[in-house]
Amino acid sequence: MRPGAVLGYNGVMTLIRTNTPNAAAADEAAFEYALRVFSEGARPVVIVPSYDETVRLKKAWSERMSFGIDVATLSSWAADLWELYGDGRTFVDSVQRELIAGAALRDHCEQSPGCL
Image 1 (cartoon, rainbow, N blue to C red):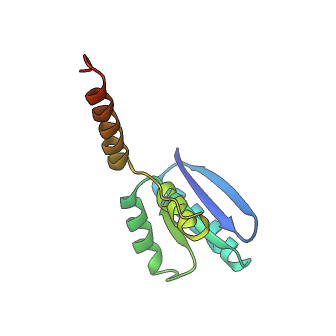
Image 2 (image 1 turned 90 degrees about the horizontal axis):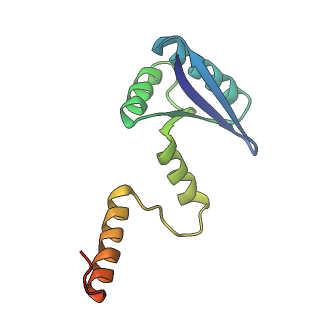
C-alpha cells in the first residue's frame, strides 16, 4: 500500500489519508481529491514524503493543471505556514541542532574538569 495525504485549507483544515495499491493509483487519488477541493474554493496541499516526490508530482501534474494544487513535504509545508503566520522565531534543522548541541557541550566541558 502506498500512503499519501491531501490537505484542503479553506478556514478549516481537513486531512484525507489515502492507501492505494500502487504509485499510479496514489497519484491519481491525490490529484482527483485535490482537484475537487480546489473546485470547492479551498487551497489543497498534497503532502509527500520527500523532495524528489514533490518534484516528480509537480512535473507530472503541471500538464493537467498548472496552478492551484500545492505539493510539499510536511516539513516544508509547516515551514511555509510558520513563515506566514509564525511569531518571527525560526525552525532549527538537524545541522543547526547538532552545531548548537556541540557548542553547548563544549562550553559545559570547558567549565567542568574531567568532562570528556
